[in-house]
Image 1 (cartoon, one colour):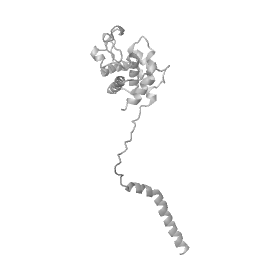
Image 2 (cartoon, helix red, strand yellow):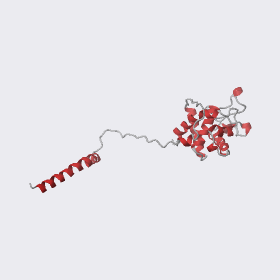
Image 3 (tube, helix red, strand yellow):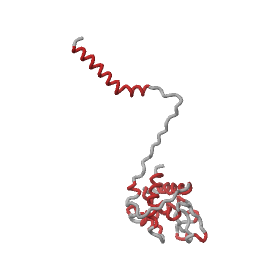
Image 4 (cartoon, helix red, strand yellow):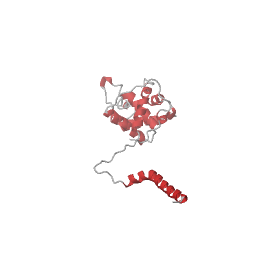
Length: 197
């Protein structure tokens, strides 16, 4: 065989071999029939979580507290998030709302507590009918009480740029104005976990 023909044949064979290496496995898998008796594999896709700089723009203030939530408390947190979305407010409003409820009621929808009651305070935010927050039935409705709290929050100029405890205190007028700050990290974690679920 002459040298020129031999080089051409070897060159073509080399290209075919190289093409087979790179294209062969892909083509082989594409044509393969599915294996009988196997179940499809579910792949979980995590929705994007809210940006932490939106949830805690100033960083947390002071020592943080955390409690384990039961099913009722988790449902109340989700109700606060749903009401926040209904109001058209951003994730930060949900963080402030949940932190406020964690401080006021530990996310429990409290009814009248008898002698242990703080005046006539009720619900997730310990709002008082005598202070104009609504009727006892309204205040103990998680959606209503959240929307009432957030209506007050929206009336605070610059609430989005305030530290959490300052924004919450301006609405709540608590005897313990700095107490809300301790719940900011847990509230942000709850919102991050549930905002897109």
